[in-house]
Image (tube, rainbow, N blue to C red):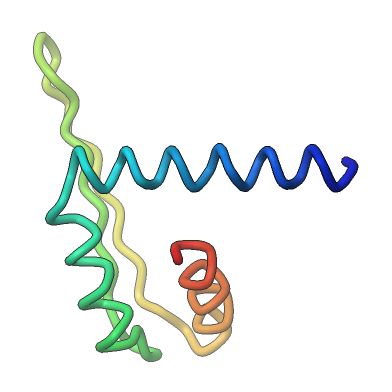
Length: 81
């Protein structure tokens, strides 16, 4: 990937994030709260996805953050800026 492609990809990502924030203004506030509070070892992260009807399936996952996860979460935090 050349520098022009990388810059274009970054620009597209920023635009997509701006649109997402406009569509879902409470979610970035939630992310900022979590970022400011931190996600130390022992924190439990729960993800729940509910699909629309007709099946309405509900999928759930939960992780307990380990010390080795904290660095990855900090890297992901940097991508969300």
